Length: 322
Image (tube, rainbow, N blue to C red; front, side, top):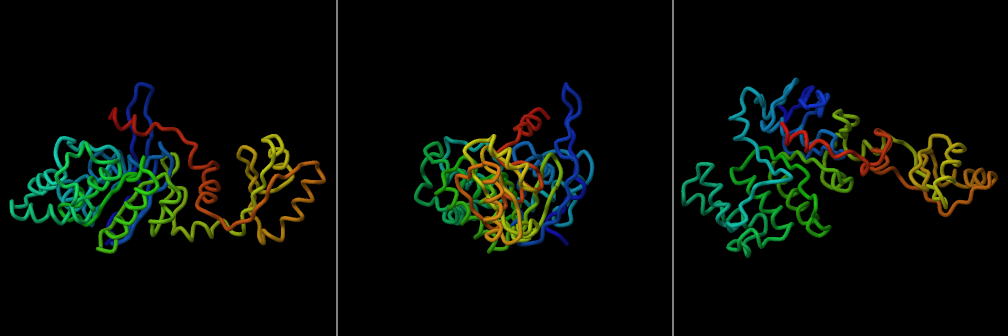
């Protein structure tokens, strides 16, 4: 039995302009005890998929299961097995970290003594013991994200959903949260993580599903996805976009972005001299050139046709208007 299973999930929103398919057809399976990354730009359908799997949004068609329980038919039982840390949460900034953990534990049915014990455990787990009696409004962004993570774990869920948990954090705080997430996996928690950060997906995920425009366009381990491209990626940098555009007509299997041209070939280092000569013969001056093994950035570019940064931010508006 899979920890999480999505099968042909679809979500259609009704708008004044007509129906909008935020999720067109998403399927994947998550094994127990792994970190599964859902990678994609804003508006791709990542958050909508998570909201359906966590029973917070009705499924239009298809089905989702958590530990064998249907998210539509067994929603109350599903919620007992999952923890959720969304992008925007309604944490009470006037309460202290200690008060929030204690109150959350009580809401989950813990006795007063057990709630106090669990509060101490969670404060220690997310590194907030010293700030336990400070009001949350005094916490930094990174501290609030760790608090939110801890609150989602109070009831000891089997499956944890993290929707872009490090958005807006500085690199140092992001690294701290990554270590917390890895530790949770070591403790046996299954984690589904949505992100638009390539480095984050590469660092954390055992397997990755790339979602674009409401569809799964690639899936595999980070290494499998990189290997699927094959060869080496050669990057040429020119003085202008016009030069890069001219070079694209001379170099097969290439893509351009601004003044850069990238092509994937076998034995990249050996091919560079021939390609440089070809460009030089056509009076195209190369500022710099490099050859590297494929990255997730290269994978994303190949399967979607664009880099991760360039995407519309419309999904959140659709969800808010649901």
